[in-house]
Image 1 (tube, rainbow, N blue to C red):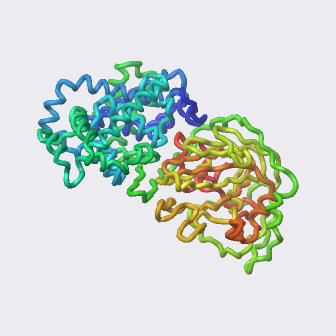
Image 2 (cartoon, helix red, strand yellow; image 1 turned 90 degrees about the vertical axis):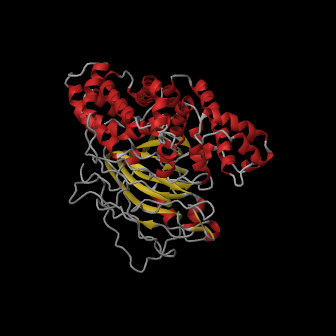
Image 3 (cartoon, one colour; image 1 turned 180 degrees about the vertical axis):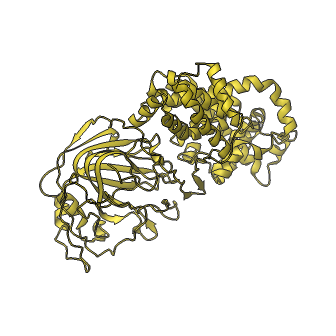
Length: 589
């Protein structure tokens, strides 16, 4: 069983109780996963739409009987694979002749071609997607789940549960399927070589051009023993490095519309006890799938082409429906009192006022009565201030102990909580300043950038300052920023995303959960409480390139409720934190 975040478990519980909004949320957030698993397992057969709809019908009608809400995703994957196998059993006798008659061998009609087109794959990524065509049905199932694991959509425990086996057994299955995939990649590379090896051409003389498991084995024997063919394989990169973090293929509008219509049609019946368990329930639900309307919702896809990153658009967030309890804090971290570190103190000389100083507003505790809207959003990029402009004075807000819990690791440098993988999160509770330190490991991996998000806010949260001595788009060497270089590829941010600084500072009075949503770009985030003195020392450190301090910090705090709030902030707990909308929801509460 895989441990899921509290908000997802609560959504499953609400859906099981017949909450129409919760059912809709589960369908929206998990439909891309189901579509990609089924599509890859069935290699894009035209019946993919029907199998996906049947899977969602069984999920909607069966969620009320799920014993452990935390196992929802494993249960969902198992249903999807069972539906694929049921489809294969029921249609297998007619498939061979029918596919031949309909020209199903056309490479442009399968899921590999769809993946190449919609994800903009090129080079070795394209070869890897094409190599899947050469595998058998069992490998398609395993690799479909493995691809979702690499995309960050499944954990290894969920992959194993979906296959109905232990994690060690699943690891063996995955390893064997990967081995056959690598063999298929070698065949694809050898066949694409120009001029083609004469021995390979002879071995493929009777081949009809349709990739298959049988012909992979035959051609692989030649490639393995041929120096000319193996010489073309020297630069092949392991598939997991090529595919890690790639986005999911977008769900077609018709499937998305049908699934959402299913949720809205069946959920009231489930709540009212009108649907029986089992095949009868699915049959009743399936009646809503007779007509598949087009144009209700399309799930956005992340596009990746040749290392250039395009970021998916985010759906508007539905209004909050219920309050879920925050994860229990597991680690107590108290802010240190007194002076900042010696290194910071040496750099923290009182700055000269800027040419256009901002008057220091009167501090007001975050709990005071509002006289206007709470916070202002920062959903647009801002320009970097001049490097030598000292920051405006930082208002001093009241502070107390901060607790940090959640699913996270610890930084090697100072032991602060760190969230370094998709799905990692920290829940912060208390009153005081919090630092988020950004690390973009562009040398490890680039790909789509999905911003970090703040969810489940109770209280007030302000984005008070930016520091660390640099913005992440500052050059650390000629032609190389803290987000990459032409050789490694630059991280592209979504439209409206504020450029991150090395250190971002926030003030919290309440509780909030902070998520790492990485899906391609390798992002490490460290979260730690800070005192006002420590924040100010960081902001006011004088530029000193020899020490890596490239610019003064930036004060954002106005000292009252007009201060900016973090981007991607919501008071609800959406099933998928990566889909929190760009505009923050801060006008209530």
